[in-house]
Image (cartoon, rainbow, N blue to C red):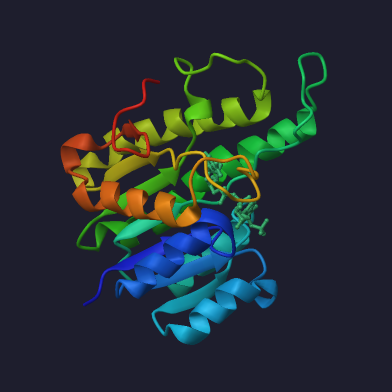
Length: 231
Ligand code: NAP
């Protein structure tokens, strides 16, 4: 049977390109996004490639997570890719941190990937590759923080790293490998026009890292070139 990928935030940015590349490589892709009916680019991809199935998923919606898990019962998932993420408001400075936006960043960037992983862990365990990937950011690294600011995004990605590191340890007995991936500074809505690499380049590198991933590397925080980012 062909390998399979389930990815959140598949309608644009890096998630859309990962969907395209994996499907082109012959993988079955469960492409999840908040509004499939408005996901024009993803719908066009799916029309050209029968390997792609669209699923509605707001990652913060627990009922949608549960109904997705029910719909995919007994369906192996080789790579569960927690890609969906938000930066939050861009104008957050010290003294002006908005708590509701901060909570939303934690909900989307940290809690949701864990809840999706908990819901689909049996599917991952039943697959050949058994990989949980989480799109994190170098901005979640304490060691790499030389410029301050970005309180909401940095802290929510650092929390994601902490949670996924624990999952890497807890899921080891089930043969599951967890990878924390920094995608580079990528030309997307989030990355902006000054970013350094295209979604094509980022997705190619991410696929290479996942292709070469070994169980002993579980819980590693990878840079886009495959090197290790210090926490
Ligand atoms: P993007 O173009 O802004 O796309 C973000 C994706 O996340 C969209 O598909 C969006 O869906 C989805 N999303 C946001 N909230 C969601 C929710 N509640 N439920 C489901 N989907 C949701 O960003 P990107 O650059 O491709 O980023 C992808 C990942 O890479 C993120 O985790 C980001 O933090 C990380 N990252 C990006 C960069 C970069 O330079 N671009 C650098 C480091 C890390 P909607 O269209 O419905 O909003």
